[in-house]
Length: 63
Image (cartoon, rainbow, N blue to C red; front, top):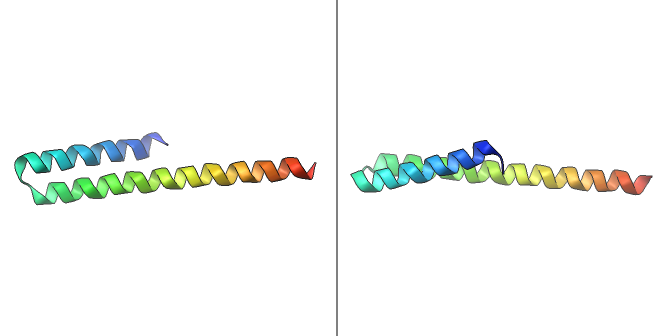
């Protein structure tokens, strides 16, 4: 997982907790959005790595 996706997830959790503590629905929502964005970026990075691994495996089989 990349640093950017992990950072978004942590930032999102922090905003959610702050929103809970202050009773701020908007901050809670922003936190959920940031967290979801981080999870999506992480999933895309994982998929990209998997595809690269398959590509490399196919190259090795051709030789």
